[in-house]
Length: 278
Ligand code: DGL
Image 1 (cartoon, rainbow, N blue to C red):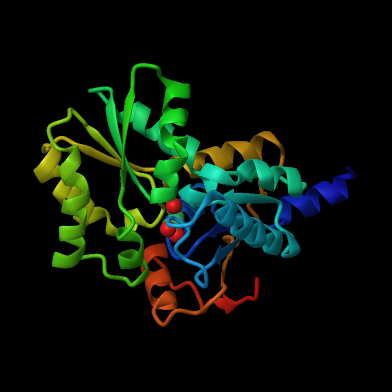
Image 2 (cartoon, rainbow, N blue to C red):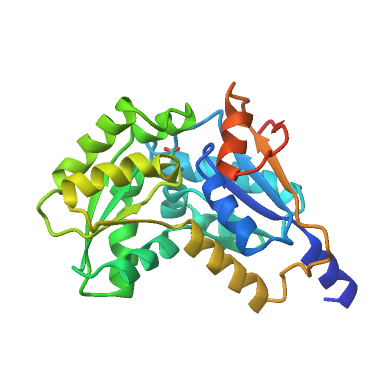
């Protein structure tokens, strides 16, 4: 590749997608780790949730999202969705000629690093739990750590609705955490990128049910670290040139509360999302 093409590639944006708002928790971590990068984020709000759908459907949706981002000229794709990261990366890598990174391996790493009891619980969508991706990723890192899976599908629509505090999400979180009580778990992985939006509620209930020292981890920061080293190692990281990178939001349907909830979770006004047809 000529030096000019390499420079153009470094300046290209990073593509990130999820079924809806959840992946913005990963965008926030990417913004912190890679402030110079431009990010194009696609929330497939027309087809959320992914977590209740089968692997073929999720893979098809993920491919549609990734192809749209490729048309926007991205240099790499981050699947900011555990459900899609559990089933779709290989197919995306085969079909698209660019790097594809997911959130499961970083989430497993965060869990293995945090546990002292060698027993971690993963709260995730039904699709992620059914895929067995977390137990596999944890086992690849440590044969001592046991992984308990718990599907928590109702937390996704609560997050999409912006219903992140109060009695309803608290009761839902309690219901999902109860089966994990008294089992020696000291780490709960938020194995769905929507769940950090309800982090306070989940953490509060986990401390009551699993013990005051339980740690709640998510994959956002570990994913951002992986993406950052990946881009640097391959000479793909954008050189800081003064102005910070921009975040451009795309959605396949415009829910009433998207812009407001997006700004809240990015920690900065995100600008109106652009509606796209996948
Ligand atoms: N945020 C996604 C995940 O991490 C998907 C949630 C959903 O659409 O069900 O699994």
